[in-house]
Structure formats: structure tokens, C-alpha cells
Length: 131
Image 1 (cartoon, rainbow, N blue to C red):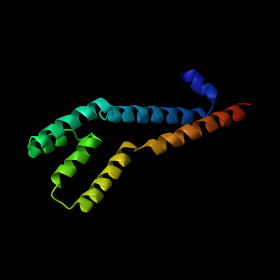
Image 2: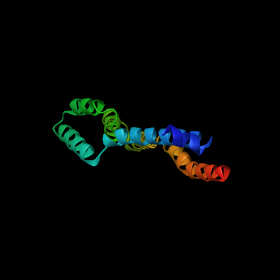
Image 3: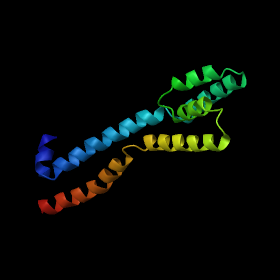
């Protein structure tokens, strides 16, 4: 492996670095999104809705707090904690919380997109400098 790196020249170092960073981002996002899978979210929502229907709102909020990585749990928790607010105010708060959850889920994807777009150009540069 080291021999291939040396043969590739100085352009191989940024390509290798970008590959390592890209794989790290993909694995981290996979780990985060795995906790947000549809089956997990569906089970959480059913459990929380059942508790709310039975009048156990405090227990429903506690269950949501036990799932800090779940975007749905965060949204439900804020909605349940502020359920006494007027509907238009609650809607704006939930919209902001939803936007924050989306930003949290999309974190580091811009870096990954940059690596994906730059890596082929670095490969071409390596080919040209090698010739």
C-alpha cells in the first residue's frame, strides 16, 4: 500500500486524506441515521401517542427525552411540553424545532459533497503530473 502511495506522487496524499475523511463522515451519518429508521420512529410514535391518549403526558415526555438522537422524539417532546400555547405559536415553535432537526441530520453532508466533487479532479491532476 505504501508503495502505491509513493508511486502516486504528492497528489495521492490529499486523495487519501479525502477518502479517509469521506469514509468517516459516511460511517458517522450511518450511525446517526440508523437510530432514526422508520421502524424505530413508528414504534416510538405509537408508544407516545398511546400514553398521551391514556392521559400520561409526563410519561410520554420522559420517553421522548430518553431518545435524544431521534428527531421525532425531539419534535414530540417540544410539542407535548408546550401543548398549552396557542396553536399558531406552537406551530411556529414546532417548525423551528423541525428545521433544527433537519440541520442536525444534514450535518457534514456539505463536506462530503466537496470531497466527492474534488477527488476526481485530484485524480486527473495526478494523472497529468505523472505523465
